[in-house]
View: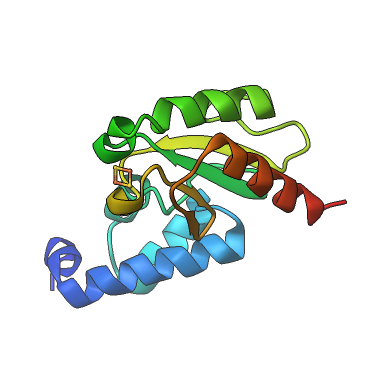
Length: 151
Ligand code: FES
């Protein structure tokens, strides 16, 4: 089977997504070495594996803070007025811009398109956990809780 045929094979694609997730857990983010190992194990081109890794917001290809705060900027979240307000609020609370990490290495702020929680928008994902119907007050509680784990 050619590498192009392998990437189109649904079973292999499914294995790829899972393998990328496991590699990310092991490496902290998808380093070039992690991507190469996954590609080698599944017999897929590195470029295809990297392309998949960079497409999904679940995967991180750069070092991040302990907690990656992903604020949805999708249409549903935007329509309820949440996205911009929450991003601005987190910017001021954390003193960072989207794509940056706090100096203490605790938080990375990102914006993403749709967290598949449109019915309970606005939504924020923190690592693997989804937080719905977010407000500024809930953001404060969330940051306080996460910081509390590191006192
Ligand atoms: S648009 Fe925000 S969760 Fe879908």
